[in-house]
Image (cartoon, rainbow, N blue to C red; front, top):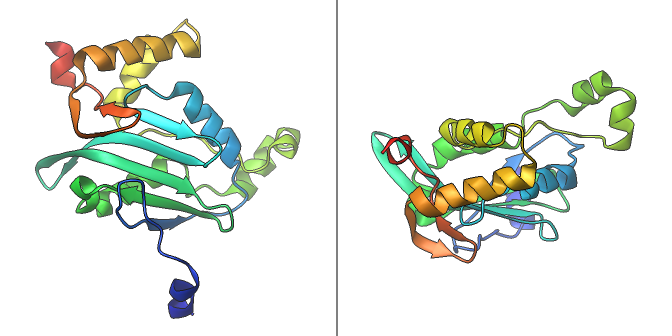
Length: 190
């Protein structure tokens, strides 16, 4: 019963005090592998991954209904149920309808793990539920790909961090570990 489910599940609240939206996925999901992948590539000032808490925080600029919104969001993998809790801060809350598909693509929540594991064969036995990470912003992904060519992940992360510090817009409401937005194409072109 949907009503019972709501009563049994306590309201989740993000670090910025906003309620959480529950995004379901098909198990299994290799949560630790996904979080480690994202942590290794997290841009200081833009993204923070807490492996122990199974949480991702990041700043985000989003076009929604002709308006540019910016703020922070928190994503937490529930330990008991196949859910990701999405908590946008108030500046992004009205764009929740746009955030949900973005997060679903970013974390590959709509994948069919049975089909993936079948294709991976023996590789899937070691780590069932592997997913393909996406991105929050295509321009950001392109810049990261260019800067990351022919160097290590750590070196690419350092270059991107320098780019963010130099050209990224300071976040209106910074939080520990989240201070900037990724630079816009216009800022980079200038």
